[in-house]
View 1: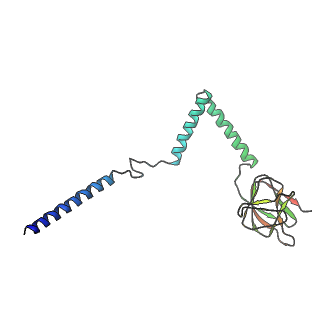
View 2: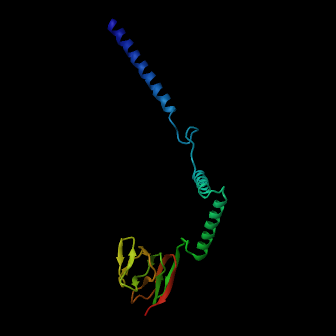
View 3: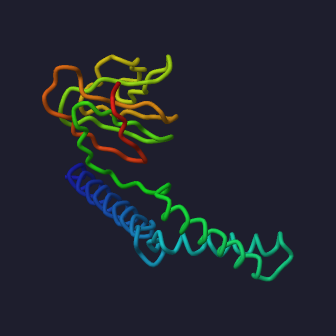
Length: 185
Protein backbone atom coordinates (compact mmCIF):
# COMPACT_ATOMS: atom_id res chain seq x y z
CA UNK A 1 0.00 0.00 0.00
CA UNK A 2 2.89 2.26 0.78
CA UNK A 3 4.33 1.77 -2.69
CA UNK A 4 0.99 2.70 -4.32
CA UNK A 5 0.82 5.90 -2.28
CA UNK A 6 4.44 6.70 -3.10
CA UNK A 7 3.79 6.16 -6.83
CA UNK A 8 0.68 8.37 -6.65
CA UNK A 9 2.54 11.15 -4.84
CA UNK A 10 5.45 10.95 -7.31
CA UNK A 11 3.04 11.09 -10.26
CA UNK A 12 1.22 14.13 -8.85
CA UNK A 13 4.54 15.83 -8.16
CA UNK A 14 5.78 15.09 -11.73
CA UNK A 15 2.56 16.42 -13.26
CA UNK A 16 2.80 19.54 -11.10
CA UNK A 17 6.39 20.17 -12.23
CA UNK A 18 5.42 19.70 -15.91
CA UNK A 19 2.49 22.14 -15.55
CA UNK A 20 4.67 24.70 -13.75
CA UNK A 21 7.43 24.45 -16.42
CA UNK A 22 4.82 24.72 -19.19
CA UNK A 23 3.33 27.89 -17.77
CA UNK A 24 6.79 29.40 -17.31
CA UNK A 25 7.72 28.71 -20.93
CA UNK A 26 4.44 30.05 -22.29
CA UNK A 27 4.72 33.24 -20.23
CA UNK A 28 8.27 33.71 -21.52
CA UNK A 29 7.02 33.18 -25.08
CA UNK A 30 4.49 35.97 -24.57
CA UNK A 31 7.26 38.38 -23.62
CA UNK A 32 9.17 37.83 -26.88
CA UNK A 33 8.93 40.63 -29.43
CA UNK A 34 6.14 40.17 -31.95
CA UNK A 35 6.59 42.03 -35.26
CA UNK A 36 4.09 44.86 -35.57
CA UNK A 37 3.41 45.04 -31.83
CA UNK A 38 4.03 48.07 -29.62
CA UNK A 39 7.42 46.60 -28.71
CA UNK A 40 8.38 46.20 -32.38
CA UNK A 41 6.45 48.63 -34.63
CA UNK A 42 6.43 48.22 -38.39
CA UNK A 43 8.74 50.66 -40.16
CA UNK A 44 7.65 51.81 -43.61
CA UNK A 45 9.80 52.74 -46.59
CA UNK A 46 8.52 56.33 -46.53
CA UNK A 47 9.63 56.69 -42.89
CA UNK A 48 13.13 55.43 -43.74
CA UNK A 49 13.29 57.70 -46.81
CA UNK A 50 12.35 60.72 -44.71
CA UNK A 51 14.90 59.88 -42.02
CA UNK A 52 17.68 59.40 -44.60
CA UNK A 53 16.73 62.65 -46.39
CA UNK A 54 16.81 64.53 -43.09
CA UNK A 55 20.25 63.09 -42.28
CA UNK A 56 21.57 63.97 -45.75
CA UNK A 57 20.25 67.54 -45.46
CA UNK A 58 21.78 67.93 -42.01
CA UNK A 59 25.13 66.56 -43.21
CA UNK A 60 25.16 68.83 -46.29
CA UNK A 61 24.31 71.84 -44.16
CA UNK A 62 27.12 70.95 -41.76
CA UNK A 63 29.65 70.46 -44.60
CA UNK A 64 28.72 73.66 -46.39
CA UNK A 65 28.59 75.62 -43.16
CA UNK A 66 25.14 76.84 -44.04
CA UNK A 67 21.87 76.22 -42.33
CA UNK A 68 19.94 74.71 -45.21
CA UNK A 69 20.43 77.21 -48.05
CA UNK A 70 23.10 74.98 -49.64
CA UNK A 71 20.69 72.08 -49.51
CA UNK A 72 18.11 74.10 -51.45
CA UNK A 73 20.71 74.96 -54.10
CA UNK A 74 21.67 71.31 -54.48
CA UNK A 75 18.00 70.28 -54.66
CA UNK A 76 17.39 72.93 -57.35
CA UNK A 77 20.35 71.60 -59.36
CA UNK A 78 19.04 68.03 -59.06
CA UNK A 79 15.56 69.12 -60.16
CA UNK A 80 16.99 70.96 -63.18
CA UNK A 81 19.09 67.92 -64.12
CA UNK A 82 16.07 65.61 -63.80
CA UNK A 83 13.99 67.91 -66.04
CA UNK A 84 16.78 68.04 -68.62
CA UNK A 85 17.09 64.25 -68.66
CA UNK A 86 13.34 63.82 -69.13
CA UNK A 87 13.33 66.29 -72.05
CA UNK A 88 16.28 64.65 -73.81
CA UNK A 89 14.93 61.15 -73.31
CA UNK A 90 18.17 60.15 -71.61
CA UNK A 91 16.48 59.09 -68.41
CA UNK A 92 13.66 57.25 -70.12
CA UNK A 93 13.12 53.63 -69.27
CA UNK A 94 10.22 53.26 -71.69
CA UNK A 95 10.23 50.30 -74.04
CA UNK A 96 9.12 51.12 -77.57
CA UNK A 97 7.87 48.60 -80.14
CA UNK A 98 9.64 49.33 -83.43
CA UNK A 99 8.96 47.77 -86.84
CA UNK A 100 12.07 47.55 -89.01
CA UNK A 101 11.15 47.41 -92.71
CA UNK A 102 13.04 45.13 -95.09
CA UNK A 103 16.03 46.99 -96.54
CA UNK A 104 16.62 49.13 -93.41
CA UNK A 105 18.88 48.76 -90.40
CA UNK A 106 17.90 49.64 -86.86
CA UNK A 107 21.00 51.36 -85.47
CA UNK A 108 21.37 51.86 -81.72
CA UNK A 109 22.74 54.91 -79.95
CA UNK A 110 25.04 54.52 -76.93
CA UNK A 111 23.47 52.42 -74.17
CA UNK A 112 20.42 51.23 -76.10
CA UNK A 113 18.91 47.78 -75.62
CA UNK A 114 17.04 45.66 -78.18
CA UNK A 115 14.95 42.51 -77.99
CA UNK A 116 14.01 41.00 -81.36
CA UNK A 117 10.43 39.71 -80.98
CA UNK A 118 9.41 38.72 -84.53
CA UNK A 119 11.29 38.02 -87.75
CA UNK A 120 14.79 36.74 -88.41
CA UNK A 121 17.42 39.31 -87.45
CA UNK A 122 21.08 39.63 -88.33
CA UNK A 123 23.70 41.61 -86.39
CA UNK A 124 25.25 44.69 -87.98
CA UNK A 125 28.45 46.44 -86.94
CA UNK A 126 30.55 48.87 -88.93
CA UNK A 127 33.76 47.62 -87.29
CA UNK A 128 35.19 44.28 -86.13
CA UNK A 129 33.30 44.37 -82.83
CA UNK A 130 29.93 42.69 -82.52
CA UNK A 131 26.90 43.24 -80.33
CA UNK A 132 26.47 41.98 -76.76
CA UNK A 133 23.92 39.20 -76.23
CA UNK A 134 23.31 39.47 -72.49
CA UNK A 135 20.98 36.46 -72.43
CA UNK A 136 23.64 34.02 -73.67
CA UNK A 137 26.58 36.06 -72.43
CA UNK A 138 28.35 36.19 -75.78
CA UNK A 139 29.35 38.58 -78.54
CA UNK A 140 27.46 38.31 -81.84
CA UNK A 141 29.67 39.31 -84.77
CA UNK A 142 28.35 41.31 -87.72
CA UNK A 143 26.46 39.13 -90.21
CA UNK A 144 25.49 36.43 -87.68
CA UNK A 145 21.95 35.58 -86.55
CA UNK A 146 20.46 37.44 -83.57
CA UNK A 147 18.20 35.07 -81.60
CA UNK A 148 14.65 36.18 -80.82
CA UNK A 149 13.75 37.09 -77.22
CA UNK A 150 17.39 37.77 -76.22
CA UNK A 151 18.42 41.02 -74.55
CA UNK A 152 20.98 42.78 -76.75
CA UNK A 153 23.03 45.65 -75.31
CA UNK A 154 24.78 48.36 -77.33
CA UNK A 155 27.33 50.08 -75.05
CA UNK A 156 28.49 52.08 -78.09
CA UNK A 157 26.28 53.31 -80.88
CA UNK A 158 26.65 52.62 -84.60
CA UNK A 159 25.73 48.94 -84.33
CA UNK A 160 22.35 47.36 -84.81
CA UNK A 161 20.15 44.73 -86.40
CA UNK A 162 18.67 44.18 -89.82
CA UNK A 163 16.31 41.64 -91.40
CA UNK A 164 18.08 38.60 -92.85
CA UNK A 165 18.40 38.49 -96.62
CA UNK A 166 15.50 36.84 -98.40
CA UNK A 167 13.03 37.73 -95.67
CA UNK A 168 9.80 39.23 -96.99
CA UNK A 169 8.60 40.90 -93.79
CA UNK A 170 10.45 43.21 -91.48
CA UNK A 171 11.38 42.80 -87.84
CA UNK A 172 9.51 43.65 -84.69
CA UNK A 173 11.97 44.87 -82.06
CA UNK A 174 11.49 46.13 -78.51
CA UNK A 175 13.82 49.10 -78.02
CA UNK A 176 14.87 50.89 -74.85
CA UNK A 177 16.99 53.94 -75.58
CA UNK A 178 17.69 56.01 -78.64
CA UNK A 179 17.99 54.65 -82.18
CA UNK A 180 17.85 55.56 -85.85
CA UNK A 181 17.10 53.86 -89.16
CA UNK A 182 19.70 53.49 -91.93
CA UNK A 183 19.26 52.26 -95.47
CA UNK A 184 21.26 49.16 -96.34
CA UNK A 185 23.87 49.40 -99.09
